[in-house]
Amino acid sequence: MFAASRDPHGRRRRRLVASVLVGAFLLALPACTAQTPPSGGIASPEARPTPDALEVAREAVAAMSVRDRIASLLVFHLPGTDPQALGAFVDEVRPGGLIFMGDNIGDSPDAVAALAGAVQDPSLPLLLAVDQEGGDVNRLPGDSWPAGEQLHGLDGTVVGNAFAARADLVVRCGLNTNFGIVADVTADPASFIFSRSLGTTPDESSAHVTAAVEAESAASVLSTLKHFPGHGAAPGDSHSSVPHTDMSLDTWRTTDALPFAAGVDAGAPMVMFGHLVYSSVDDVPATMSTRWHEILRDDLGFDGIMISDDMVMLENSGDPAYANRLDNAIRTLDAGMTMLLYVADGQQPVDPGELIDGLEAAVSDGRIAPETIDAAATIVMAQRLALAADA
Image (cartoon, rainbow, N blue to C red; front, top):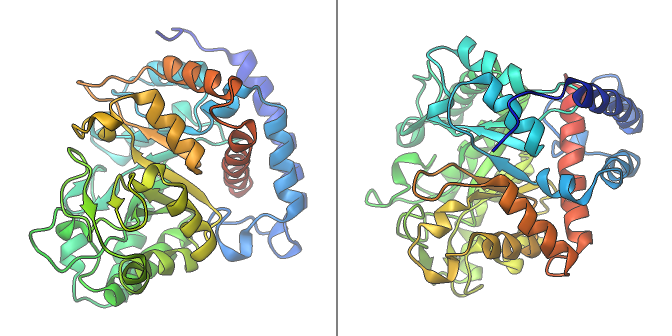
């Protein structure tokens, strides 16, 4: 499916172009950050790109083919620890990022870092991500710090210390993005998300989310808040169903919204959407709801990367309305999502080329506006240039 050999000349040309872009990006940053590159990504308040910096990202996107713009919005998982296979995949597909799952993880941080280094391009970094919540969701070797339910009732300092250590581990493993801050809130021990949540009340969860984001930002790890707009209110497991709740928007604003608002205010550069239906707001999952994207942008003031939860989960939900992979992708991007996540599934294998072909055709025939792709690709490009500037 992918070329066995890599294209060193093509990669060298891309690195040369990227180095010029990074130089221009640095010059366009505010004077207070131009000499000290941003450590927390584009959503840190002091490091948000100026209009000039965004223009550099916009010009970089304009120089890309439509196909490469689309690919830059996708985060894939390729099983295994073969650096040649992973490198060939990146060179062929040119995704915006990769997620490392359990089958990508060696027996030590050095082993993980070696694999990450084989695919990473410092001149225009991929978002190399991992679900490192700790506790129940623990991918990387050596994470014994408290997480999830273990942090309920504890001081925010304890949370900050745990996530500072966790972020340091992510960095030592050669990764730059953690899908690890659960902003869902519930006091119900029977809830699917209870053991992974950081608090049992909106106030506790908000304080803990803030501490976690600040700790990860200090380590130059891109924090991700999940699962917007909140799994705690929607019972059920979104890996095998589409959880529903009839919670009103007014109630949400004073409860489940608070940890996400706190994380956004703390500077989290990414928010992961859950495949959750809040029927009083929209009758489709938040992932593909234009209204929920508007609420996050306009009401919570978030201007970073919105990323879906694993899109294959929708197909595995059993709901025939979400059985078509390409249709799901089109609807989700059209709603305003910045990036789509795909985890390899033995039952539902992901063919990146086929998916990108379909999305390219959707742009060509108007099912997705080209401006929608360009806007999302610019946000992703700005974050990747910020990572390069911070290297």
